Image (tube, rainbow, N blue to C red; front, side):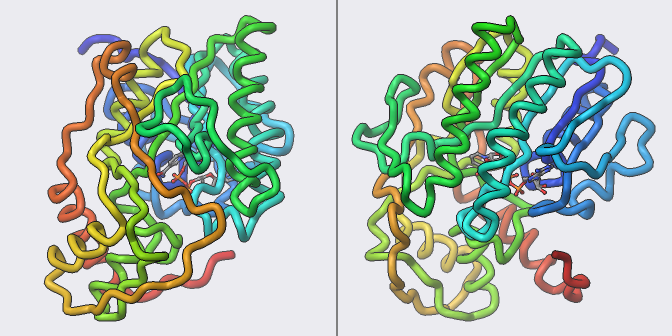
Amino acid sequence: MTAPAHRRAVVTGGAGFLGSYLCERLLERGTEVICMDNFLTGSPDNVAHLLGRPAFRIVECDLTEFVHVSGDVDLVLHFASAASPVDYLRHPIETLKVGSLGTLHALGLAKEKGARFVLASTSEVYGDPLEHPQREDYWGNVNPVGPRSVYDEAKRFAESLTTAYRNSREADTAIVRIFNTYGPRMRPHDGRAIPTFIRQALSGEPITVAGDGGQTRSICYVTDTVEGILALADSDFTGPVNIGNPAELSMLELARTIRDLTGSSSPIEFVERPADDPAVRRPDTSLAAERLGWRPRVDVVDGLRRTIAWFHDKLREPAPLARR
Ligand code: NAD
């Protein structure tokens, strides 16, 4: 077996949706993984299948506090942060703190260990974009005092901090701007469109589409996103680089597709659109293709089918005891 690209990695937010797949994939590649999480929006259940593996360790900690890891580390993937609008609006200060203090501590850890650092940034740094599709050199259109700013500005600050560590502290950093990603392990009530539509369709409730449903998103299946992130980790490219699926669809098309795939007869109901909800969103992924040789592979219908199958089983399980 060839040596793994990285020997020992820290994944912050490793018990979350994306973080859990990153832990899993790194272990498959032969990397030892330390998963750090405070379980604010994630859960140990997401990595329960990895517990007991000698190369996997989970550490409950808040990244906004001092962070210490003993021994060598050669990769830090900084994924800790609430990510769904419902979560970050419920935890606005925590979101700003993890984007600022949490990023500072994760960068400090990477610098101390001489590890490569990858920041999970987001398409939300483009705000309600005035350029379409969004290329990495577009600076974005964000309302700094709007409700979404707690997330968008935290990530913009985190990008700035990461860049400053690279330029003034010689840290080996990279920034990935992740576009909407979906798949099994999303929480049915996390408020994002795909879990909401699937949950509503499977239970026969009305599917609630915001506004007239004409606003668009580009959705990427989780295994594709994870391969893109790891391709960046393995490279010496600094980014920022977009990782997402350029196949764009309107929210109404998404709702109808999910209704068809679930065989549901749920009606579609139009509800008020949230403030500052972006009208369009589509990544230009030419940079990822050119610098990382990455492109998404899973087509939307296939990815949605896999996700629906998982939700179908999940929603039939008895409700877990309430967590905070
Ligand atoms: P998630 O909420 O499932 O995971 C985030 C994890 O971070 C959770 O396990 C949470 O408990 C943990 N966390 C939050 N604050 C923490 C703190 N102070 N200390 C330690 N752990 C903390 O969200 P996700 O969808 O997996 O997103 C992961 C990362 O990817 C986030 O940084 C998010 O901004 C970014 N991202 C995700 C998407 C997407 O579509 N899922 C898109 C763009 C960017």
